[in-house]
Amino acid sequence: MTYFLFTQRGADVDQQSGRMKNTALHEAAALGPAGLQSAQVLLSCKAGVRRRNAGGQTAYDVAVNSGCNDTVSLLAARTGRDLLGKLGKHKLNLQVL
Image (cartoon, rainbow, N blue to C red; front, side, top):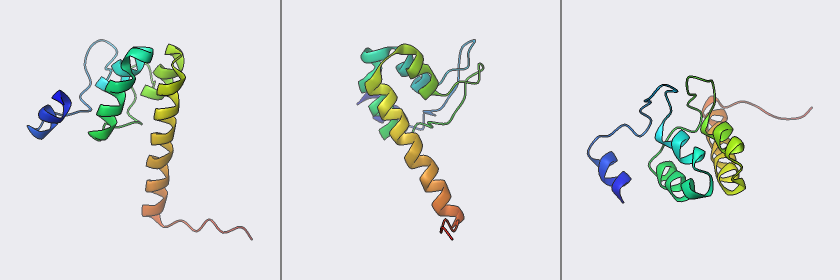
């Protein structure tokens, strides 16, 4: 609920901060199972799944390192949808000859 209120008031859900320039989604992924619900809420607020921190890691990479399979699956699914959406915008012809 708090995330929704912040974003409705213009907060940047992808703001990077700290030494590693993590986003809130990176931080949620780093929490392992404790961050799953936060990651779900952030994604519903359109948090960017492909944003990289200062170490070149996406939130997915951080989730893999945290060992939380549920968060890894959530971020993998969202990353896939994001990439498919971008392919659709470019109207690529993927026919097999």
